[in-house]
Length: 287
Image (cartoon, rainbow, N blue to C red):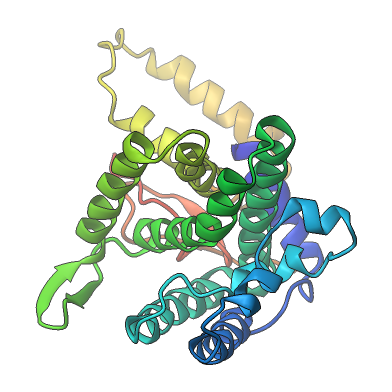
């Protein structure tokens, strides 16, 4: 996961114009328009023509590969609150990550959902099951986006139910419980959809989480340090290295990327250098 994330970071650095600026704004507006027209469509024809349907896609209706993300998951006026909340999360992630990385995040979630839907279609051949997965698939894309937001901003407070101040990390914990409940209660193979959403999240944060858990794991007592040997080793490494700064997240150096800015994080324990893309986007070192 960490190597894949490093490749994504390098791609984003080399292609700063990749992606769609204000992507969540367009998704929210399109979803709102579909919701308004679907309120006037008692037969559900509009949603049917927009939903992800492998059988119809194979017959030429390729627009469904994109339009299914605009199908609202709630027909009540609560959808407006839902859209506002995820517009806020999406724009915050885009500002934090940059346009290319956020676009890749949403694109990977969509691709994973489409692949899973087609896999179920070819394996199960049950129109009812496939239709259920197509309808709820985009919901987990948004939830994986929320997990990403909670990982970057765990202590940010929001008003839960409009009046209860609660930190994002506790809401993420409630969502994690919701994920587990869905895995247990949803019929097979729809119960695998939460796993697909978590997979998209792990692509972007799995390496950082693994490193954090490894740092917190108990370590065996180290033997006595030979200070002369350690000093010689450090001097040798200092002479051999071909850079002055190296990002602790993506591994980019000032030699490979001379135009990239590097900074040290004041919140991390010790001295850890990060590039301009990760100085505000990393899990802080605690020891």
